[in-house]
Length: 441
Image (cartoon, rainbow, N blue to C red):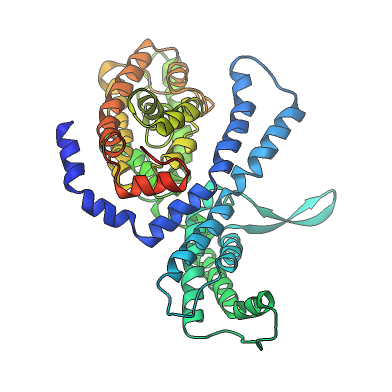
């Protein structure tokens, strides 16, 4: 543990330099601006899923109400992040613009949101009531569309910068009101940005037959073949955490190409168990949900507990209390965006290492200890220990595994949290906390 602390202290200047990069700062600010969406919508996800676990069946009208709120808040997070990231980057870019020239953050925000839609939404025509109706796929408008959101934001701001710097604008007489003149000044920049996003998405659809928002998943799908090995499991779980750390929905990127194998292996395990054998294939959906992703991407189940019990800051203790219930049920957005963990270089190592170590230990319990591999498909929002116990056929060794994983995750996360939050907070941590209105003492 001391070695990890010394490593982090030694490389603190490098981490500070990375954290001050204007693009990373823009992403961080973009996420922080949308924290009310994350915190509020997570509550309705829990309300729509928890009652079923205790035998309560909610009326369909109530479920539809909860799901509608979640879908039109969290389900649109990608669009909102595109806009707020572009706005933040435009303000940072203005400090580097020549004297007398500046970008309009509001115009950049609107343009990035439009560009994000072009990079992620697919139009279709379906028959509804006997009439052809135009509809569009909304799956990439939320967290799955973060890649498209970042590309749209960065592309927009840089095109605006080029246009404004080189006077590629429409100038109106001074007598014209400022708001109208500003709108005309941004026409070229707006148009070029939108066309750039449209052509990028067109190329992605023509070459790979997928929207740009799904490009990463399509490119890496050959890499994540169904390899049920220790390196393979560690690679898959580490990749999920890596993408999540960058603000991209890791499970969607990594798991989507191997969904068939995940569910197929679950069926195989159940058939083996019913035949009196030992279900031993770890590469299943529930392994990722309850073991490799205990408490959500990055295995953050233990993080709110550490914040509550060991942090000196009242704000961090409050963050732990606010996020502990969602994290227990696998909804860890409040803690990974609220601390933040996402794009925080000081948290990169534990966030990446914890799921990889969990995957290796989980597979060891299956191969060596004899624990049943997951053989049912349980709701992902079940608390990790309960989900693992149920999906392994009430195997008591799964509860032992959960205890071991919580101890191991504590050892992995504790040093980084202590050095970054309980000592003099580095620039990134203090700046983020100040902007949240929660200065760290």
